[in-house]
Picture 1 (cartoon, rainbow, N blue to C red):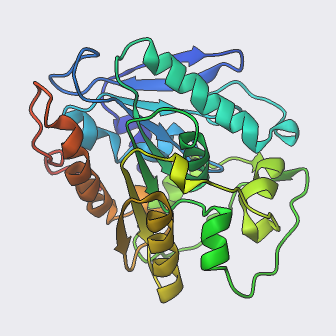
Picture 2: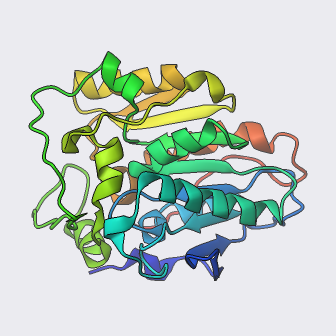
Length: 294
């Protein structure tokens, strides 16, 4: 099994806040904290951690972006906590803690990049916290988007005390190799049932309300669009936030981060991020890291 987390560029890490959140910090090539570009803050999804960004990070550091990967409480190398007591709002506090840490180094707020559960957390955070931009990758949807394009034929499952990690015992995927799947299986862990009960319609949640009018930063929504309803939800989310949209057919939820077509999402993000580099004294040409095998 290929462990992509062990192929990350050299970086530093530290624990922050009273919950000892594990924060990984990657210096962009030819960049510094004084760079005019905003840093990037990557927020992982349920069951995962900063390791889920292992294929992404080399491209952004190669292009000069300083990048931070937060691990929410109880995830990956963050201090273990009792997940039966962790709520959606606690995860919001964790992201605020990371932004506060970044604010000590930079004069500009970060661009927040959220995947899945990290996406709905990032949307809610953006209502009241100043950020430079918002990128959502196959994000969990808010209540307003669900009202417009509801999931059909759901048989909601009520979570127990915790939600166990996905088994990922499948032998094939539309866009993931067996190595990609095995990599995830190695690190996937349990998740807070209370958090799921707040945002996941598949677990009977009423959903998280997001006031799109309060989110004034530029935004980009990228979705795995495998049918018309997936595409409609992605477009509705982008419209709700006043942002741009990219739907990628034939991709999977986790494949957008660790699958064989992840570079398509990264390429679109690079183009979108170029707006923040225009006034930077650092090179700003959007590009991918050179021929990194997947």
